[in-house]
Image (cartoon, rainbow, N blue to C red; front, side, top):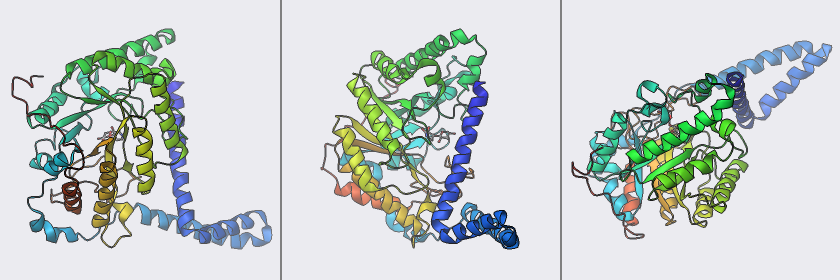
Length: 439
Ligand code: XIL
């Protein structure tokens, strides 16, 4: 039953996406499509207009198909930045970021970890997948831990003086799709009356085991990730945790994380599509309520995957301030803006870089905004690639697929250098000696 419900809910998400696509089309191609549609409908209901209706219907289908093909087919843009590589040699974002007192991070996995580009450009890193529930379980067996891959990332970061963000302890979304065990399916093997306590035990053990393992190594954790319904208006997602543990699963996770290690900075992380709709408001209210209830929450993570439209920077500025006014810290935790969204610009690569510059400047302008993490290093691999809803080129990172610097490097280097001294310099993690970093 639960499985069926999940399938139905995914189907609804898909239908919603398709609808959104057509709504966007109507907004873009607008009136022409609307008129054709109207003519087709008239033809359907009035016999004397049937022929006209049929012809317009065929025309409409053709038009929509062509438009869909146009939107979904990959595009390429010129790369004027290639001519500037020699001039940019020696640019170091990392040092400038540290001197400007901000974390500039990247999501890493074991394949892109040991690259000089990581050391050159980032003073923070987030394991992209390796600290997630399913990835920590040995052979995906629930409750059996194998930290080896995650350890190698954390160890490498510490030995190079890079901060690590912990991502993530409790994440209800897409658990079956992304190598996290499908906890719903797992729980179905147990009698219904026992499922809540089994899940509670699993979550509590997980939080305690992982935080104890990384005590003193990872200072900041996304305790709960994406608690909101992805296409909703700010309501909690109907995930396995909400179903079996109730809405208090969020507060409980923070509480236990705090008890396990009171030194940690505990963050609620969410994907938002802009910073001013009902959903964004719902996230703010959720955070405010947690704080009012005395839950040990210290910061929020605004993921900032820029997927469909470019959000208003001014709205972001206001939104960040609403959280910092509550005394919370803010980080942009998973930034990637699809290149295609800048396709109308004369040089999309440059426009993308300028946009990143605005993001970083907005964060720098508020001392409570402590860092920005980009969700990868090079365009060689990006989580959106290959998914039909994100037609290429996505290319959201600092380096292109051949690890050549993109314009964002120059833009950020300038902004960060200018910001030097504007806030306290970050006291970077001292590169660990072998003895310190035994994991
Ligand atoms: C994504 C990773 O980038 C992919 O490699 C993985 O297959 C699935 O997860 N929001 C999050 C991140 O919080 O953990 C997701 O990362 C992207 C969306």
